[in-house]
Image (cartoon, rainbow, N blue to C red; front, side, top):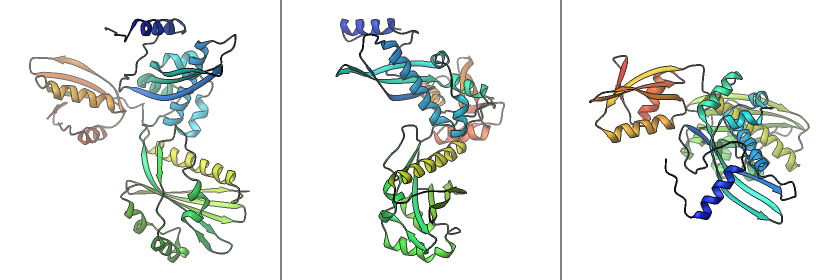
Length: 358
């Protein structure tokens, strides 16, 4: 491998940065698709007598790992992973890059990008009996409605504290993005019309206007300071109802509302992660052959395999003058593999044990 540096000073900087680290990594902005890439890890430390850049980088590794785990595991499983040793984290890092570093007012600031080896992460979690999730980002239509049970009043849109505060604070580990509905008097009247049966109302007349297949209707039943929240979560035409109860919630206190929103977001993130969970205990071998004379197809095929999170590994078994033979280790069923590949415009003939890419 040939590494080119812009100039000699750039070479010296890279060289001495490597010397300052406990372990040796190749620092690069180009990350393999087989990695989990965690970017914008910001660390700052006072530049004092005992300042150690090595420790700052180590803190960045810990923070990056924590964010990754928060992204690919449900909240209950994250407690199982606490206490992991730094050496274990380093053993799962494939590469890292220093995006930016600077000194301001005797404080050192650094922005890191860290790439974790996907296979090692999956193996680590499997040993902890934790099933990870594919970190797919998703946009949901969110419709929060407050129902004051004491006076049978319904509050929506900008008069609703949930509506106003929902998108104020978001965590970098969150996978879900929320689109709030526009204020529509017709929609409001329709909801009020269905007030007596609102827990059974499907809201399709409203949600279909936004061209989103997935939605969450959050019904907040308020009774003094006690709150019951019924969430109607629709993903790919599948509807799940979740009931949660909370007490001592002050609806006039913005901090109380924000804390409650944070708990709801965790619930919705967990539901989405369960929907995208990877059963790493399944390691299905799939055998594929394709024409060796179509270099573009071969290149695109491997690129797609790298991008699919459920592909645990793949390698070339053999090749001859006409074909290349692959073995793919897949964390799922054959039908899921075929669907994922079809979505990428790859179709197979599956009549024989070795599938043929058409």
